Image (cartoon, rainbow, N blue to C red):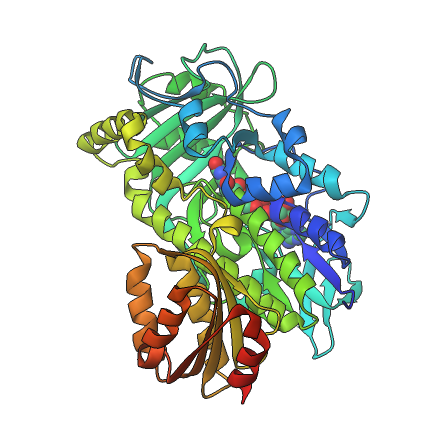
Length: 512
Ligand SMILES: Cc1cc2nc3c(=O)[nH]c(=O)nc-3n(C[C@H](O)[C@H](O)[C@H](O)COP(=O)(O)OP(=O)(O)OC[C@H]3O[C@@H](n4cnc5c(N)ncnc54)[C@H](O)[C@@H]3O)c2cc1C
């Protein structure tokens, strides 16, 4: 495998995880991070799903576990009334159980630091550095740094977060991809002098919510403010304190004290819009985006960190599977984008209820919180999270023998909506340069089709049956014979079954 020299812009979660896995697969990564040092600000995260899976593969679970938050006995989120009395509670243990035990509450800075420790001895990380220009040639990509120096790489990855500099330089201004979700958020740290009724206490009034939760630092709480507002874009530091005070005037519970504890000059207050980044493609020549830069899902999805790390893992993995970097970038996008899109859709559907705009909505939210803590409704909680690792649930795995308009997939598991989208993206992209596609499906273990995916299946057949020239279904089970029989002409012009031992003949037939 040719060793690639890859510049990663952004030393956050995606950037550090990517650097780790690029090094692991034998590529040379250089990370540039705009901040002067590891960041110690931030907020708490729910960490589960794909990111957790990748963290296990990195062997960093024990290091992360030492920094966990929400660990006290009986910990969880308490939704309190104006007097601070809990009216609904979601216990951390219930969440952990729904997620099969693979859940941690973490501070963003601790997750970042553990990732940094895992990679710092193997990869060059340059703090206080950013780029101002990118030029591409067929052979390379050249960046210009803020100090005017230039450097050439094989690939450039934008892992520089929601307000990505690389996206701005190469793909276009943020406003072209930003989808405002109707909220602003603010976070800052305060001294813990409140004796909260849970590790996280939340108080909601129509259109605004304030919360405070334990961090890993003794005597310190973190706050989270969310409020509905018109999109005014970026709020400069010196206007932040005033903005929050105005939005939370006359709010009940401990709000006025928490506002009084706000750090003075606004420098240590995070304020941002809750905005998704939605792009048609994450690739432009030798430049590719990952994490929030590519598809910020917002805190409403509760999975941005996890998917940033998961996406980074897949990008590095794909770059280790083929010498053809263009194909690798395409495979990465085809695998990860449907997963991000699904979670973005879920977050978008949930956005209005996140901080309800009416008294009735607030009451309904409390009722909902009570319900999901009952066992019988745990499925609801799970479906809201989409909490499984997509590295384990995805049923389709592209075969390395795929080439040009000959595409092969191994099928193992239950076919999900996102699997069809992966296949559709691949076929669509192939059809941009070829008249037809020839498909091979190696059925290893088909555990059925997810309910939601049936409409994708039907759509796939209608959309592509006259574009798929040949379909080879390879497998020893009776099901694969049936699939081949039913596929013609529903999914392909010509379909044929082969036993697993006849894999070579299947490719030969496809290419004949
Ligand atoms: C309040 C809040 C709560 C959240 N809760 C959750 C949660 O519960 N679970 C979850 O999974 N996710 C959560 N998220 C989302 C999660 O934090 C993000 O999705 C995740 O951090 C994205 O990782 P990233 O590496 O793509 O971006 P980031 O972590 O933002 O890293 C980007 C990095 O790029 C650097 N950078 C920026 N510009 C440049 C430049 N010009 N040059 C070089 N470097 C640059 C930044 O300094 C930063 O280090 C939450 C987010 C917020 C704001």
